[in-house]
Length: 206
Image 1 (cartoon, rainbow, N blue to C red):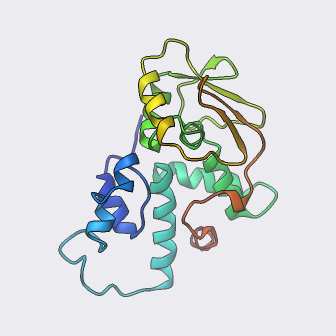
Image 2: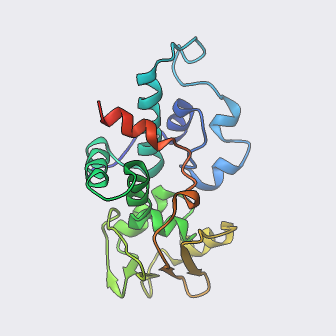
């Protein structure tokens, strides 16, 4: 299965914000954005000519890298969001938030989305009692996400829960039994993705 393989710290530096792609490291002074806040490459410290298209492109790339989604996947999410009732940008973020790997991360069962993706791919999680190994699986309201009994990744999951300060309001987590529930669909105010989704809509609307 295809996945993003670019160096994670380089992705954060390119977007100029912390995308929290490396888990605990992003919270320390070793974070590349803290040490070198300019874009990577030999021209990183040079002046960049800002344009409307550049701003739109950067927001799209930022959202894509934040969730670890490839270009074709992201475009498909946008097409699906545009067919839904409601604001297209908000529907796009909602679809990305409801990916199983993101839900595992939001529940605090993984230190990063990359780790959550790997745990899901290796079949460590169940959804409503059934093994699901597809990171892009769309969870729904009242779905129960739980760690598979006897899973080899239990130690990593418990270590991740120790780092979790809080869980999103639209989710309910039981870190003792390593289970979580999707209480309802997330509202835009509850999605802390550092992007302006309207710029993404404008980019794809051209």
